[in-house]
Each structure stands twice: as structure tokens, then as C-alpha cells.
Image (cartoon, rainbow, N blue to C red; front, side):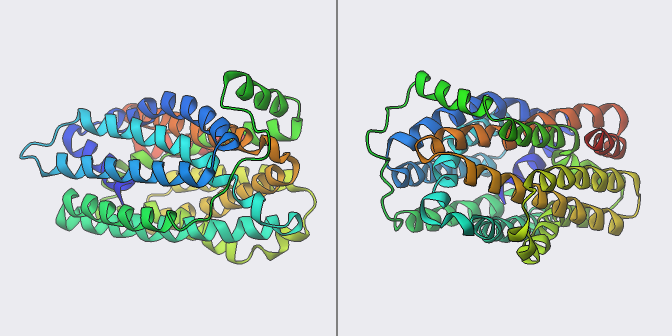
Length: 354
């Protein structure tokens, strides 16, 4: 909910697509630095401890958003500070979280586990934005941020119930040398580089989420804003629920390529049409394409990376699927300020396909 309320609040305070897109710029450096360090950290310490501490930190940042929203005149700069801090903590947490799966699931069941794990994210990504759109539209930012704080209290308590996940024997301490070792391994594997490059291109050109509030204005459909944010996750969910055939696929690279191309084509169609219901349908199809690409990437990563490097490679993976959206927000916001929201979306979708 906070991820939806935050750009909406920046829009309310500034009215500028570029100011909303600038969130991606302030998030970029913390994500890169802490994502790489978080990967090395995940290989060297108990991953449960990393997950619990970062989850608590994210809860505190939600409380900062709540306090700022309670001010008579909420300030703009804390929103950017929180956005950068969330990126830093997410960069630390995601490698530890993502590298858990291969430690507990048999090799042959990893594709199915990736699909099931995606359902966890999709449930929140459907319900959170849809609810946030209604709450913010009719009650304001304070209830959205307050709900986020309460939910983080619950998630911290649940994370504390995870079993310890100690590092492998003789694990190296986090260091630049260790990070470089992981980067050299990734660079030596063309199949990994291919997954990174495809996803980076898809997200840079065709990730317009931050300008959805302006798209809703252009379509005169403010009521549909929460649905725009949720539609992609609905498409992802439907793909996940019908993804049993993925476990029989051997050409996982083709899933990555065709899924990313489908994402871009559907985004182009969403930006081209002026019918809000068709926009929602195409956003759903885009989410299905992204999920297909994600299943291919996840399977390639989990089945080819040695356990001793899994945390560091997870840090690089965080960058591959997170840096693109951050840069994509900046691209979409800057172009929307120049051409309007719809051209910024459909041209980006076509560039992704190309």
C-alpha cells in the first residue's frame, strides 16, 4: 500500500511526472550498493537474522511516512529519503530471501517452487494496490501508511519464526573481493548475462508504473488507478496458476525472451488504447508476459549457481530486476512530462520489443 501511496503523495505535492519519476533516481544508487553488499552478506551470516532486521527497518520507514502524512503540511524531502532508504534495505534483504529457496527445495522441483513462491508476491501485489487506490482516493494517505505499519509489525513477528539459515562451512566474510568473485562468475556465464540483459531492457523501456496516476487523469478514470497497479499482478497470478507445463520445458531462455517481448507488446497496446477497460486487460497481459520471463530467469538462476556463491549472485540478480524499473521510472516520468503519459507508455513498449 505504501508503494502506491508514496508516488501518489508526490504527485499531490508537486503535480509533476518528472518529480514522481525521480523516485527511481534516488533509489538507484542505494539499490546497487546495498544489493551487491547484501549478496555477500547473505553468503556470510545467518540469512534469518538479515531478513528479520531489514523487515523491522522497513517497518520503521513506514512509520516515518505515517508521521510525515500526519503533519498539517506534509514535506516532500522525507518522501525521497524514505524511498532511498527502502531501496537500501530491500537491497540488503532480497539476496538473503531469494537465496533461501534453493537451500530447501529439491533441484527438480525448483520451477514449481518458483511459481508457488510467485503466488505469495502476487497476492499482495493484487490486494495492496487495489485497496490502496480506494483508501487513498476516499480517506487519504494516513490510513494507507497506518495499515502498512501494522502489517509490518505482523510480518516481523512471522519472520522471527523462521528457522536459522547459517552460511556454508568456511564462508568468507563480506568483502569487495568476494563481491568481485561473484561478478566474475556471472560474467563467465553467457546464459546468466542474457537473463540480466533481457530483463534490464524490458524494465527500462516498458515500466511505466509511476506515471499511472497521470494516465488515469488522461483517461478521466481516477477510480481505476488501484486497478492499474493491480492488473499486472492479476495476469501474473493467472500465468502462475496455469504454469505446470513450465516444469516440462527445457529451453528456459526462450521463456525469458518471449515473455519479455510479450510484456513490451502488451504495454505498447495499453498505452495506445484510450479505453480504460482495454488498458486494464493489456496491463494484465503484460503481467503474464513478465511472469513467464520471470519463471525462466528463476529456473536458470536456481539450477546453475553453486551454493557457495548463491547469495552474491542473488545480489546481482536483485540489481538485474530492480535497476531496470528504477531507470524505467525516470525514463517514463521524463518522457510523460514532454509527450504525455500515453505516448510515454506505448513508445516504451515498442522499444522493449525491439
